Length: 411
Ligand code: HEM
Image (cartoon, rainbow, N blue to C red):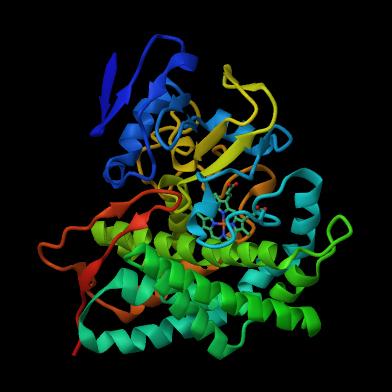
């Protein structure tokens, strides 16, 4: 049997879900527009499915199955070759990034040492700075009357904020933003390699400084943390720092762009979130359920086991499609409907992940998104898409919007 789901052909052979092979690659740009239709069809037929794409992996789309894989870190390791979040890092592929790619006790020790930088209080303390950065960026934009808000706004603010959280000085934050942008907008492999090397060298310089002169900032704590009796080495630290910047920057920038797109589609909602901070909070949380910026990350199976009744072998790679879990009809009523009035007593959505790797930066992300959105709506009245603009969605490890050409009223 062949199912056509949302434009992507999904091959189904046999009736046992364990035998089902689906041709789905989250890295194929063609899946982006209809990703959740396709994933929904796969989930309803087979919440744990084998895909022949990307050298073979197991696509997990059901809520219960994704939550189990994320929680059982003794069976499913966060270190995964070529499939998950580390794919956004261009350097130091061989190193294992502390925190992000480690498990169980080793991971707990790291998480405990970094926790203090990511509490709700620490996040709230960044709000004023985030607001100041937003206002600076918007002041420059206002007179133009039109812009692509992805490049001109959504991607401008988060790299500076994560730079501040790491403990970089003002000029270094600007340097970080510029080079991270160069890295992720590189058009050729050579350009990407060059940008990646320059960026890695910059981070290495910061790491060495903090090894000799620790200051108590996040990066100093990362550099000097003793876990299992040793400090992380240079390669581990560069990879971990790149992942920390990516986690803080790419996610929030894409979430902000997706949020703006939703608001442009619904002027009444725009009014509501502009006028009511509770509605704004609910909007951001519903956005992370409905269309999470972290779309899919990976795990490696550590021992022969089962997931959702499907036998798995040691070494199998899993892809956890977080956004699909959040629309699972076995858990959420009308999961495909965006609804900021959704019952808060409903099961916890998985847009921030689950288990021990659940997003460490979620309080910061919430603060950043709320401030970025409210400042934008206040500064750019009459915000609307440019006539005839075609907006292209993206999908992969991270989900967002390729560009948002808009106009606004100005004198
Ligand atoms: C809307 C924005 C964001 C979303 C949707 C999001 C989502 C996620 C998800 C789903 C995970 C778990 C990945 C997995 O288990 O494989 C994760 C982990 C993580 N996130 Fe976020 N994130 C966001 C913003 C941020 C920000 C602003 C930071 C700040 C640095 C951050 C820091 C982290 C870290 C450090 C981890 C790894 C935690 C660990 O391995 O213990 N995230 N995030």
